[in-house]
Image (tube, rainbow, N blue to C red):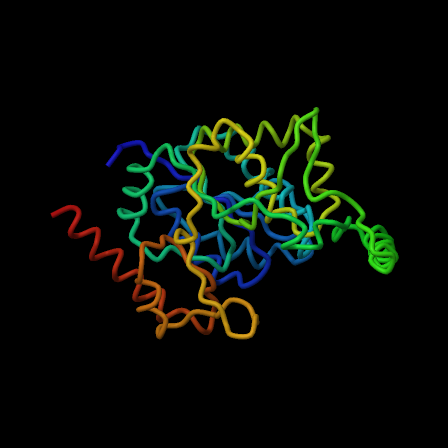
Length: 300
């Protein structure tokens, strides 16, 4: 194992301080963890939960807090705020974006080995998308601003009634056409790629404006930038890095429990969603036992 290999985890959280504590305690055993707590919730329970977390890595609360709403641009603002905070501390070999309800399902040794063996690969599950697939791409939206959101909703209804579109499902910026790539709100990027992405976000405000006026921009922004960058050929569009067990009838992700252990161990996933206090403790205990056993094998 590379001696100084370091992962920076960027964690978006808004609920379940105890589960966030378990996640941070696990991650900071070998890595640094940057946590953004939604500005719409009380910070103190999360601060108290994280206060006693210690490891070889460190846990940092984001200096800036945003009121993140579902489908809003604010989640990108929070993500890049944490990324910038991380770069101000040191250079990292890998950046991984998670939520407070995610958790590693492989040992630290396995995760680090995977990223070391694939040091120049960028992991984000995405492909080119269009308004034919996701017709909301044809209309402006603004989840972060209530009045503007209402205006856009009314305008969209008028346009739909007239059989018209409000915008193109691609970006024209500085004379270049950017087809949209998604849907990939989670990713694991090399340090060089993350640095490029942060600089692009900071210095291309005109490009960002398109995503400030769309629904769920975090599903599209990072993938779109990377697939039009020098990192394009290094992107490996794999969905098996992050494991999600879906409920039937589009009812969202299943809250994981001990009975899901077998399914989680299928394939080569590194992380999974969705762990929650009151449901997932026994499963986490099983995963931690696996991590200890793997560590013992690794060190003889």
